[in-house]
Image (tube, rainbow, N blue to C red):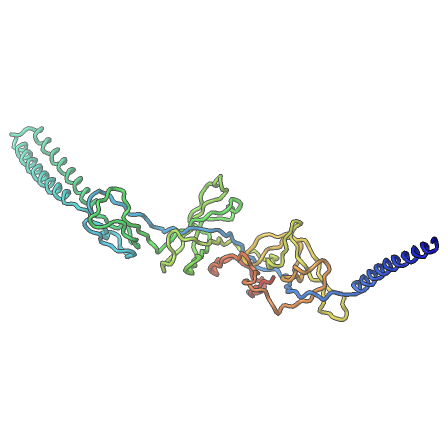
Amino acid sequence: MFKRLFIAIVLLGLVVGGIVWFKYFREQMIAQVLGGMVPAPVPVNAETVVPVTWKPGIDAVGTAISAQGVDLAIESSGLIREVRFTSNEDVTEGQQLLQIDDESEKASLAAATASLSLALAEASRARTLTDRGVGAATTLETAEAQVESARAEMARVQTSLDHKKLTAPFAGVIGIPQVEIGQYVSPGQIYATLQDLSRMRVDFSVPEQQIAALALGGSVSVASEVGGYRATGRITGIEPRVDPNTRMVSVRAEVENPSGLLLPGQFLRVSVALPEEQGVIAVPQTAVASSLYGDTIYVIRKGDEADDPEVRKVEQLFVKVGRRSGDRIEVVEGLKAGDEIVTSGQNRLTQGARVKIDNSVSLTPAQGADPAPRPEATPEAQPGTEPAAEPATQPAPAE
């Protein structure tokens, strides 16, 4: 009995030991095989860092306002007899636009004219009698006062009559009529809008930190979201106070609008051009990876692969970034001219990873290279970057 039990225990121990040994042996072999495997180099896009000419700018959103634009209002109550304009008509200064019933004023003007004629005749007779010495001086003074009163009454009636005839205060494009013939209107009622579209103002706001960069006469460029409108202009006004609620400063610029594409109230992208800076280190925004620990860039170093000289290694460096312009971002610290950096494919990289440069395929904006591109402006004022040595185009950004 004891012998059989002993043999069973020995056999069980051998089985368990074999299982443990096999598991340990398998893990050792797997580790040995994996340890000898070298991962294939990761294909990446790369770019050499060179100093560039930086064209800084202040980006903002603005609203178009016509240099001359008003809502035309009724000056006197009454029935409308004539509407002498149509929608979107080009009108000239002084052109009659509306006629309100003025029969009562015309009758009053005729009565005032007759009263003035009578007062002048009475004054003339009183003056003749006074000159002959048979008339009192007070009679002449009364007659002359009546003349002035009659003239004032005539001027008052004429003013009321003029208010029945509404004219354009300046040349421009008139809007949709808001009144109809036969409609009774009262003073202050809007009957149309008149806009001079040849020159436009653009109102926008900038943060208080950028007040020092603004100056009267400074160049600005504007672009609309629709219609393809682009223009350059000048700053004509800077509000001398900061809004305590938003900490923003209101700015006004003026641009030309000869084609009439820009309309009042339209949304605009505004860029304020600032002086150029030489020797700035700027890289594609896709090259910078941001995390809670900071911003990093992968720099390509020389590899140790003797069999394939195209295989390189990367080093992950922390950098300090600054301003952004278009698809470029300024690097203040961490990079120097001549460094070769990874511009796409870094999501598969780690410190010391093996890479192989392949610039044959570039990431297009449609694939997400520039998720928030800066709106284009006219070439004269569009902030961006270009090499200091020659006006070469920027390399295409990559992932």
